[in-house]
Length: 262
Image (cartoon, rainbow, N blue to C red; front, side, top):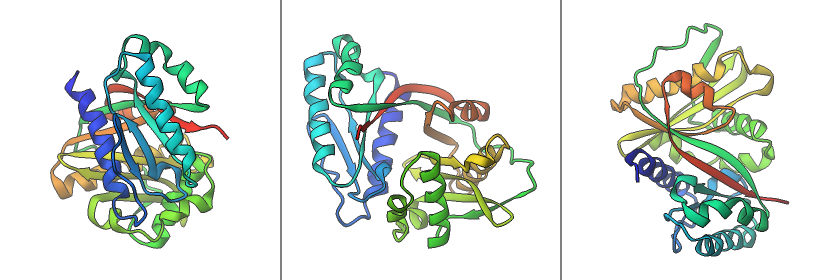
């Protein structure tokens, strides 16, 4: 298995466990072949299951995916699952899509990306003001931007607002404001010897103006200046992939997120 692929999945799992660790009703007790990072709150991205095995047999994959959906549907809080497609071969790879359809799981394609790219040239945009995330107001703006971008309920997202541990101990997150309006956000989470770029979002009417690029550069450079870490990883949606490629990231692996259908 390619080292950068192993790194990509490892960073995904361990950063998410770091993310949910402060929540009092959390579960990060791993099951057979499944890593659990479940905050047990209404914000879906904080409740995550990861398939962590290399599998070639469709029968074993079906058993694992059934366990995942049983867990997802047994909890009132919404959650999702992440599968590293490059960990699957043989009949497991061939039948994944059909198994997910059987389990009524909707796919969200992602690409793992990596780069030793820091520091970056700062953005030349002069109409943005960057504020570090760290209080109720900035956390609210962060989660509202992501909720709108990913079509999630605003109030569900705001379930993270009172928990400040991530922002005070592990993350360099920023909201970009145009005048007093929050328009974009990006966060670099310090995890081991990497910076994981996390939940980048832009207000829909503010897209295609370079705002995501600007706040990403600001967040990553702030984390680099504080830690000296040059290596950064992320897991890009199809929409975000070109932005990260222009910054110098390269693909490291293929992933698929799965959310239960209503």
